[in-house]
Length: 475
Ligand code: PHE
Image (cartoon, rainbow, N blue to C red; front, side, top):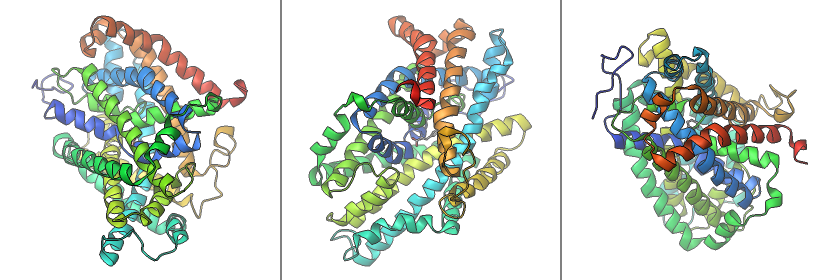
């Protein structure tokens, strides 16, 4: 494989050891809590089929073109995200301030990793709960035998009521993330993806097959794929596009950052397609895997964020071997979440390391410390800081605590805005020869991609942003 060189063009830079390592790391970044926890919750809360269809449309028509645009900027620039954009801009004779599209991403990545690790902490908690149950009651019967279902559903509110425990679990998850990021691209980030993603796929398959036999598979498919267009309102569309971006790790400069570690011999269009396909497939399988269990137990689909943490454990109660299935399920979620949080922490880490010329370990630790402060505030928004609404004066964030603000601000504003800028930059500003040399597309596909990046993606994104922020526009 080609040697990847640093900013001076001579010194070897950090890079993936192979194309497979890159693809697994990128899939690892994309597949995470977004697919397993956020997607079913959003689909359930936004009316099922119409949301799912619009989400898939967003992935294909907006997500994939943007994914390719981001990776190609990274590979061209071979630097941290803002510097990569600056290089492409300067080389194209454009203003270096286009780097703002990546700077927004660096900020978003910090904000997301802060609340993401809080949810990662919840996953650790459930691993503990199920592991204890396996030890206590064995794996023969359902989970939590003889315990009141209300008690099981009460586990999450119980955790939410315990600020210090949540902060401790957040610190644990962030600590593991930091460990792998500090070890570098080959020694840490790549290792975690290469080991955990295959294990993740095996577990997902096993649990889905299990759910298909035991649960209401048909009912789930009907729920996820029956389309009622009247449900496709402005906010639902914004939620769907936000979900598509969140799930594909876009608008956060992750793919620019990961693209910078890719060798010249890799076809970026091909890898983008693989990553997009794998991510969407996992989201749909996760829906088909979670809803049968939920429906089989006669529970509600629109439980929102509680779906994975409350409804599902409750459902594991009635299932033969439920404690073991539950344990494996949450281990699988933790694997997926870790490969994503690693990619999130890497974005600001790479920036700081390059910007201030400091060691990777130091830079990762400083960023993690900031994420810890924000994460603690997010964790406390479920209890002590429940009445603190930092952006309460903005209608979109009315009544929301720190956790929801971090999520909403990034997925509904920063990510789409960064993506719009990325499309304008790649489609209109950057030198076509630079773009064409990187994108790995030819003929008709190349023309379609350019058309999407220049017109459809930015215009659709602006439209969706507007109707999402001002729902009265569609009323
Ligand atoms: N895509 C990840 C997930 O679905 C989350 C993520 C968002 C990761 C943005 C990196 C950047 O869980």
